[in-house]
Length: 129
Image (tube, rainbow, N blue to C red; front, side, top):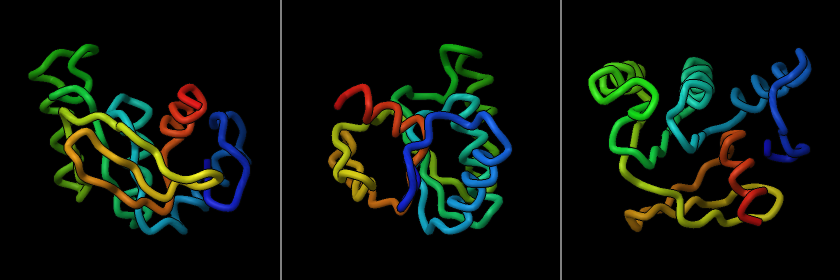
């Protein structure tokens, strides 16, 4: 879900892409849940627009199930080099907010207060009610 807008169910059209880019430019902070291929692309795009990005990944290494540990570690490298904070081995335990995410509680006990969150996080919120 984007601040002040409708839920984002995916990026299917040019208008969806332009809306996503506009929201990412306006956001001060982005929390992306999951470090899969699509989530990593969203994080990379947000970072290239000057947004502060944190990725929260439940696995110890991004993409470990898809590509294995050595390749997952190699793919994690560009995030750090580009200024993206990557937190692995932590799960999202709580999402606070109604129409807009106000805080994300992590299993580590830390809280992140984004101004925007990822499509994947919105999907998680819909599934968990």
